[in-house]
Structure formats: C-alpha cells, structure tokens
Length: 404
Image (cartoon, rainbow, N blue to C red; front, side, top):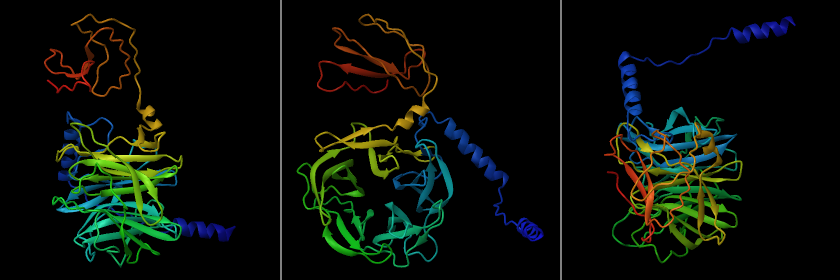
C-alpha cells in the first residue's frame, strides 16, 4: 500500500506543461468585431455551416470520414495567401466543433498549399487524406493514427501521383486506387480523369489509364471531373463531381476494378443557385451523406456556406439518386405553431401570425379554380419588401419571382 501511495504521489506531483498563447486587447477587440458582424449579417444562414474568418472562395468540403461515432469534415479556406484545410467534428451533423489544427503547408513540404481531396481508412488502420498539392503538379497524401485526427504526417514520397489534379483515393482489397480528376479547361478538348493504383498509399502510384470507359452524350468535351467522390451504393457505383462551369453532377454505373462505365448522368444544380464541390461520407447507419459548397460569392463575414447534409439513395430504376434531408434535422425544430384552415378570396391575402427569419412551413393549399396562388415570405410591415413563392398552373414550370 505504501508503494502504491508513493506511485500515486509521484504521478500527481509530475509537472504539467500548459501551452498558452498571448492574447492582446487588440485580439479580443477583433474577435468581438467579427462576432458582432456575423450576428448582424442579414443574409447569414441560421444553421448552415459558415465561417466568419478568412475567405471561403473556394470553400470546398473535403476529407469527410466517420470515426468512433464522430463525423469529421474539413473545409478549404484561404489565409495569408495560402490554401488550408480546417478540421471540424460533429455528432449530429448540424452542431460543429472547430479543431485547433489545420492541414497546411509547412517549411520543407513540396506543396505550397492544400487543395481538394478526400479521406479513407488504410490497411494499417491509419486514416489517409489524399489532396492536390499546389505547386507539385501532382497529388499528395497525409496520414494519421491519432484518435482525434489532429496529428498528421505527410508522406516523404509526395507527390505520390504525378501529374495529378483533385484526387479521390480508396482501398479495395489489397489495392489502393486513386482518381485524378480532369483539370479545368476551356479549349473544348476531351478531359478525362485518370486512374492510378498501387499497393501502398504513401509510395508512388502507377498510372493505369482513363478512369472512365465512356462518357455520356449530354456531357460536353470541355467539362472536367474535379472534386470527384466515388462510392458504391447498393449494387451500383456513383461518381459525384463538378464540371467547373456547370457545377455539381453525378454518374451512376458499373465498376469492374479497372474502369468505370457510366449508365446515366444528372446535374445537381438549380436555376439561380450553385451547388459545388460535393463530398460524401458513409456513417455507422449505412447512410451515404453528402455536403456541397453553396456559393454565396461573398468575402469576409460569413464567407463560405456549406449545404445542408443530404442522404443519398438509389431510385427504383437505379439510374438516378434520391436526395433527402437526414432525420437529425428534426432536432432543430422548436416553437411549433398550427393555423386553423381558412379561405382566401380572389385577389386578397391573409396574414399568418408566425414571424421569424428561419421558418419551416408545411402548408396544404386547395387552389380550387385559381390560376395562380402561393405565399409571400420575408415581408416588411408596409409590404414593400417581400419574396413571393408562386405556383402558376398555366405554366409548365413553377413561376419564379425575384424579391421586390
């Protein structure tokens, strides 16, 4: 017992090393200024992930991986004329914790900045990040055995794939595969992604040839395959990516271990909006979850906006994707209010008593013989400012109306 007590005393008397960083009054003032500016930003999303510091242009989501009950995600941002990956984690897909580390250039690295890529688990249990190393004309890797994924080691053989562009890397059996996306071009020449393989993730990979056996007839030659993410969904394989000028899109097809043969192709953008740089993760519930960068074309306060996470499933014909919100979004709901049924005369409007900048509205309208009907949101008290959401039954598509 005396021996045990001696050990305990020795352990508790060991000096603790506390690392601190001097914070000046100017730092505090700057932090308060940013926080106030962000909270007062009238177009800042209520619960979408945004960043108030640095510049999110681009703001690609990267490196998504699920580990030990935690969703890990990195995003691309710019600071001090360099591209970094910032690390953050969540247990519910909507509330995030920022980590103090980021993936960036260090003295002696062949890369001068970190560009888009992905994360996966290697044979040895390490989590591996593949990324395009700016200034290397190739793709690099970093790996971690840290439980929090806060400590990373870059391969001494970087870049492991050259030439290279936005990579997606994965392990299948004992073989490592890497897609090197087609670089953005505007010459109109075909620009197919390239496939690399190898038996080690941190050693040079061998170039095999074109990743895709064919392309689809609705894809133009000038379209690149940047920010690729390739995964199995049921008995099909899905490639989500971007062509820079046309935003996010996806292919569904077959993978034989040597080439991907697409069977269908679809766009993921909508008129007036941009969905960019898709990134997915497979969680412990078997869900394939997707994020993308929603271009806000801003800089500074709230620069960079991440899409709501979405769950991907195959349609019945296995030629398109179902895209739905995750069940966790229900936990964001509160203050439920319900209106009793009412009628609205032609040419008239009725004011509903709910107010706020962030509302989820579930409304059923019986239009009767009405040609046009809908609701108005974000209305000022005098009615001069409003955003109508209108359905026009005589048009082939919903009537779109700009805010007035």
